[in-house]
Amino acid sequence: MKENHIAFIMDGNGRWAQSRGMSRTRGHAAGVRSLEAIVQWSVDQSVPYLSFYAFSTENWKRPAREIRSIFRLMDTFFRRRIHTLIEKNVRILVSGDWMALPEASRNVAADTMRRTAHCTGTTVNLCINYGGQMELRRACALWAAQCQQTGDFSVPDEEEMRDLLYSGLPDVDLLIRTGGDSRISNFLLYQLAYAELFFLPVAWPDLRPEHVQKVLQQFAGRERRMGGLAPV
Ligand code: FPP
Image (cartoon, rainbow, N blue to C red; front, side, top):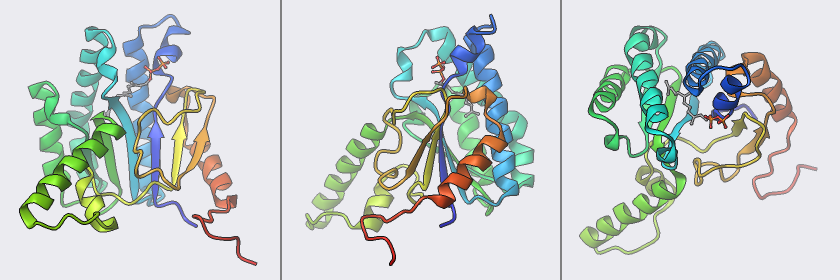
């Protein structure tokens, strides 16, 4: 089965920087360069959907300085890369409660989404102030409001459920987490239901397209039964 949607947990930026005597901010800056290289490679491979965990609902626990630097890096990415994204036909989506971001970040994210909305190549879903549990709780609230309006209190079907989630993208086929830990960390809880999981010991700034290529080779060899039986 070909990969349609690849999701990334970009872990290990801080440790990568600290092990080199650099600030954590430098690690995140190197992380943005990795993200750009992976997007570029995926566009060349015509991967339809990519999701990146850029800032979680739990990341607010970090020092204010680090949070500010992450938002600044995102803003710079949006501002500097908008023309390349459009030229490469890349659609940017932002998932999460990103309206809670500082005004400048909100504006530049909204502007990037608007200006790439017509792009039909790779969709890049940036999860910012995102939490999987929050996404599901929000979906419940939206559905409850809809039920009250229509008087129909049935369980949402697959398509209705997708519309209740932030991005409505198809389920994830494979998840790659860098940084050595084997956890999902509240990422895309609904969409990962049948994803193949790959946990790599490399830090995110060291991830290269060749690593992803290797993972895809392993993915191609995995039998995805989706609850069914292996073909005889
Ligand atoms: C996790 O590594 C990384 C983050 C919490 C932030 C990742 C954000 C970026 C790479 C910037 C995103 C930019 C765009 C354009 C969306 P960590 O800091 O937890 O690493 P550690 O476990 O080594 O401390």
